[in-house]
Image (cartoon, rainbow, N blue to C red; front, side, top):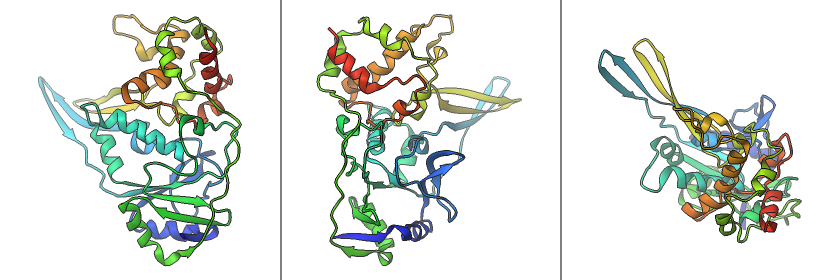
Length: 331
């Protein structure tokens, strides 16, 4: 048995939840699908995953860290007010839940806790939405992700064609379901079968093989057509490179953290002029080594969730599944 509601009545659920949470939903905003604050005139985009991943909810593209005042030889630092509003993400997919698990490792483990990230994670509830068919560039199953059961969600919602089903996973999820229980009916349901993936990747043994491939000529071949445009890193749900800069007006200033990209030459440019990644080869090598070797070595998990966004947006059609195949076949 499962709690269900007709899909056409989903706005009623979201409106009720919006009384207690800042509800974020997948929707089209300025021509791009992304997670957007819910309101009555928002057009939900539930047919496929959003283009822009949810990482900017927890790790914003631009984020003020603190204010400061510099006068003569003194420096005063002022912490910014902490947002306290509880928020809820509805419609997050399994691949993006996996990406949050990756970001948790980066920002919450190994002896350092990023309180900007931690605060947002702790006050956010997650309602996952099962996928009913793979998109053209999806390959999440190859990365160990179940597209119909998201790990780390508070509630798993199922797309049942004409209805949406809800199953509480956590205690927080059970509390949320109780808030909307008056709108839900209990029915016996079956989860629709999932289709075949167009893209697949055999990742077995790849992290280990890459340990001996740092100087392999394959990187020259792979990087040849890359433009170093950085599009892949900005739509990737797990890329987390950032830069820290200051905006100063007179004595007052603010420290700002913003996304950066290992695809850009300036990212590794040193003050003395030296750059350890001077050409496309080194930058492309670092990107795929990080995804498939360095991160698994440090955190025992891949830094790719198989969402396919990089495949969709790459202007020269670089395909990580094809690159994994080349690595497997390399001698």
